[in-house]
Length: 148
Image (cartoon, rainbow, N blue to C red; front, side, top):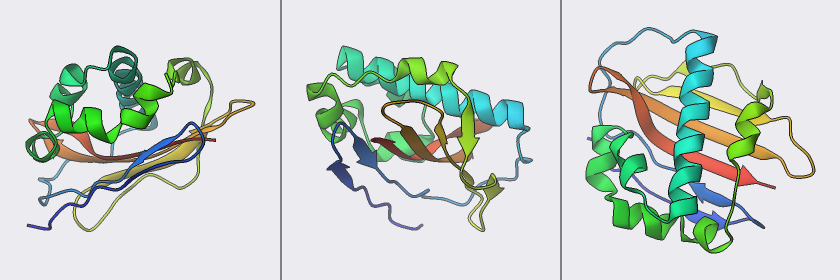
């Protein structure tokens, strides 16, 4: 197993968390662009709801098992404390068009990598997400969100 590392920092009203997958993935096909969009938008809405409620239980339930094992809801609350304290709200961005900054890919460890941003102003929401097969579906294994 590859040890995971988490890093968090604030950038204006931004939160950043980067987590690596902790196990090789069983094979799942590259999801269609529509499914990729659903993965991205659903996890961002879940994170937004967790931040707004200062309760990460539901968000925790939606992430991959290795991520859940490493980051219980209380630890997620601590990691995203800056977003909670700043009352960051970014759920409306999911109604905006997504712009991929890189082509979707499945890396050598079986992690689906999705990177892009939403066409928003005055602040732009950027994302880097990793998903691994967990419980028979693509589930979050890493997240980096920037609100600039």
